[in-house]
Image 1 (tube, helix red, strand yellow):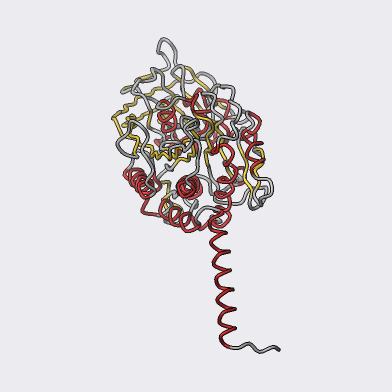
Image 2 (cartoon, one colour):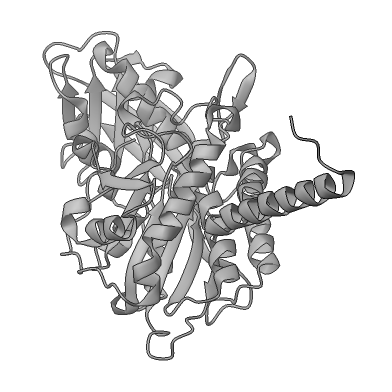
Length: 450
């Protein structure tokens, strides 16, 4: 073994240490901040955020945290706003009382649901015009009746066979946190859903008496802007978005009732903050970047709907909507999928930017889930914007979705950080103005899926 003089050995170790520091700095510079990702994730998914339900104090708390993050990054405010919070009105309805009898037998309170904006209901089977009776038998597919139930076009009493008890519970959970509407205008029609012990035979008689209340509430998106550096491109906008709201509280499981929403969608919201930080440091975006955390995605997409009305969709070049990226995808680590891949060339453009990197994006592997219309990208997509969601969630088998167990401990933060860094790289051509995705043909809204 060769012997080194102490001074030579010291110099050698110093050089090696300096090289290691440079390598670490280069690696950090190549992607988003892992420290920021973990800090923001832990804050948004913490128990004290109480599930970040829209129009609740916890939702306001989350919005104020995100506004402080945009302030820390010194982003500009959306023109016309005096803060990062884009506040708008909505209306909350509550069922004050509901009494139902079927064939003179009272229905238990936990077996009946009401979807109504009418202050008072008083129905009987002898009314003119007649109230519709919809019987969903054991062989029927419940999902095909969802539009008639959630958006009734005539007064309807729905009788569900006991086999549909899981679907009844899903609707009940949906209504428990989806009692807010964007407009005060009332639907003149209502629906009552009854889970029966057995479907009645022959003529059905019924009585329904109900009271509902409505009062105004405030909702708020959180928006920050990084102006474009190229005067010829600065009027063109690229949106990075996610929804920060979740569903608040659920029935307790092992003493835990907080639906933390770590993956859905604190993960996507964290990505928006981390990307804002990343592009702010790079400071070379030709096009204007808009970073937005939407409220009320879980209860109807009201945040993205309001946001879309404040902008000219013709000026929005693309929308990167980030939805549930906390766990590896079915394509493995360092991979994500894009919803609506076939609707524009947004996906192929991202793939071109990722050539030579460890990260890759794929088309949505779950077309039967209709994911393209189940997140906030849908609002702008219907206006022709190349607006797509990027996700890693294996949703057909995700047992933590909308549960109290969607917590940060279930996520893979290193892979999530790699995904966010991959999104940043994939967006380079669009941000620089070298790529412009084709527009999307407008399509009608899909039926909601509780």
